[in-house]
Length: 168
Image (cartoon, rainbow, N blue to C red):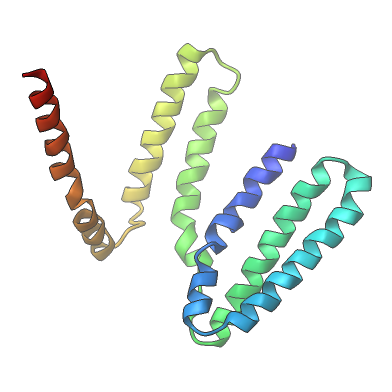
């Protein structure tokens, strides 16, 4: 249960990671400091309250609550200064794809490696297909990704040439 709670806590942690950079770019460092101090105080207070009651699960719950709190605080502030962060609108597609992937993984839970490995592969493929079928990425975002991946072909070609040169 401790690791499952920590796994869930990494979702808001991951989502909130770029927000401090945005707040800094918007000259909101003072707000960012106070939001961080509030979330830290909440987390420390919850640790003192929950560890005696729940043992090792207490810090995991504290981490989850602290991350949700700081994400909510930063989301409210971004909305106040004219940069609303519509998390539900952004996240519903990946959440559905993740749910399907999770269901597929639950089916192979506890199976031998012979059944688990194909199950994981099917779950990953299903996730990727569903992400694209649901239209998670706009055409502009896909073009930016293609442009950004332009370095891959030359890099592979260079590696291939180096291998051929070493062989000859």
